Image 1 (cartoon, helix red, strand yellow):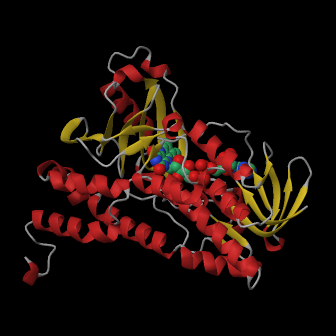
Image 2: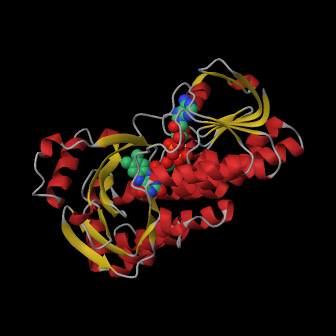
Image 3: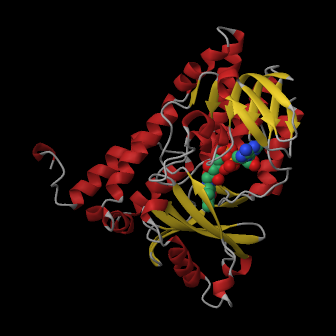
Length: 389
Ligand SMILES: Cc1cc2nc3c(=O)[nH]c(=O)nc-3n(C[C@H](O)[C@H](O)[C@H](O)COP(=O)(O)OP(=O)(O)OC[C@H]3O[C@@H](n4cnc5c(N)ncnc54)[C@H](O)[C@@H]3O)c2cc1C
């Protein structure tokens, strides 16, 4: 079987890619190891940025069924309140089971041919050919790996899916809605090292989680239990609460997102914001851009032109990832660790800027200089050049 585009993985990145390519008339195979709907461990916080990309790529989605909007945010540090923000930029809370199923459904409706549930058995990246676990063999013009943080496609190209020193890890549990009935989103900047804790309200539950750089949090389960105990002190049988864990490529993006006729998108390309952990927006956008690059290449110079085109399209996202990675190194560095939360506490406008960044109303280029300047001033100006103090 031959397809113009073979897409492995039908999360937000794969479905966005499939829909984009299929709408342009390309023949598309969309492969996933799971049948939809399927579970995906995630806070399910869909930011304003992600909502914008969803609208651009998929058009209007059934809002009431999929999302619970939250515009009230509490920023805390190890349980201590830093600031409370009402009328904050809205985060649309969703359950990934239903959200991803809807995107998958739309990609199929646009003309992509589904292969699910079926696992990948082998990949020949040089020939853009794959074999499925049921024995079928598929030949592609371009192959797109959108198969998440532990990407088999990335492994086939680079030997491993991620760098263990840089990868992030998160633990989550769904709890009764009664523990946080007022729709407030909470972010605790002291719940983990180089990461944070979160309580996200959902229509029928709350999602509580803790995440951060894996190598800096060997005791992530202890952090998780402490955060859980703070929010649910009366929860019986705490030891037997069943939390789940997953990797997220938290600021370890691939500068060259593919090889030859193979492109990587979303988590497989390491496109998760290194400070906020947001990945849905970047998965949608990079999937869409991988689709556009494939369309351009197949209409022009041929499949090998897809990667350079994709890299050009990704330049803005890579700039944002790089800027965020640098700011992260500053705000989490030892001397600054407590300074950032203190600055958020004393200057509500900084908290607001952080939330606008989270929502996609600001980008790091806007925020970076401001944050660095304020932090430097709080250290007595020692970081600023003499003439700027
Ligand atoms: C604990 C946690 C909380 C998070 N919270 C948020 C949040 O609140 N907001 C946010 O924006 N981001 C959040 N993220 C990040 C977000 O979940 C990811 O960035 C996003 O899901 C990436 O989308 P994707 O399409 O690249 O990959 P995925 O959503 O992981 O989809 C990959 C797909 O590939 C399929 N697949 C994998 N391997 C194979 C294979 N071998 N063969 C066939 N199919 C395969 C899988 O079944 C899956 O459907 C969180 C992540 C974690 C771990």
